[in-house]
Length: 327
Image (cartoon, rainbow, N blue to C red; front, side, top):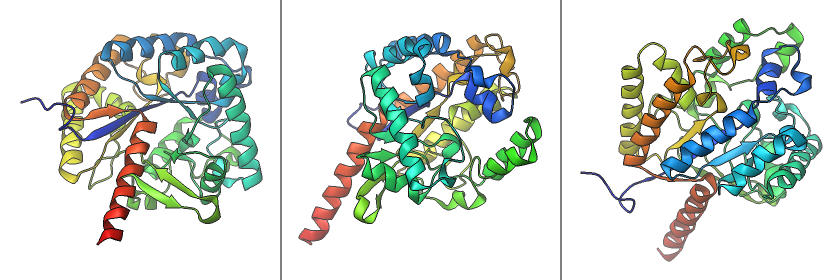
């Protein structure tokens, strides 16, 4: 029997709008400084997809893209379609956590300025590029009035992902050193999966909504990973995701599913990004799999934006405090 929305646990959808140049930059490819973009291709594609699904999600935008006139029509279309706009930093550098608080504040402020100008929306949520995360970033976010952060990725596989990336990227030793924390540390697997509140002292409080990984064993379940598994067997990849949904429900984990633009683009669209996992799939095949994944998720969870998810977490925490005080 299909559950109605009142009976379903909540889940959120978000998309990190990493552009072609940002993948090239991280990979060490020449030409990224010209800021090549696929936004005019991918934005209409995912907007059409989610309109058909009757779903809203949160799109984390890179400030550098918002600053370029050639991208602003596509970015404005996201906000006009009713999706939440989040901040994904200005320069999209995964070593953001290594900077001083003053430098982080400048980075976020610059991104906010251009994102708001391009979309008409000021972000109240943030996700660090490459899951860049630190106490300094959190304090800056709280001081700037952000409601939530979504940068934690509780997985033990970060070092393996980084090793694979270093094997395939064209990087100098100096560039590898900058990226030494990319995708996180083994210890990140011990981070909580369920949303929680951060108390940042004088800076205030912030809701943290982790990117969900497989409950109990903390292996990835984000859509790019499902597509990668589909290169070997679509049936097994979908069974894997279905098992993850079941574990989320059993453990009371409110799912937060991460998407990327390349989940909607195939090798037939972007031969230049053939180095990225699952880019041997066509766009049509990817859209077929994405549709099945989102359909499975919709049947078991009530899907929200990240802002709505954070509001519910804050409300629940407030109610729990009231109960404690009453008792």
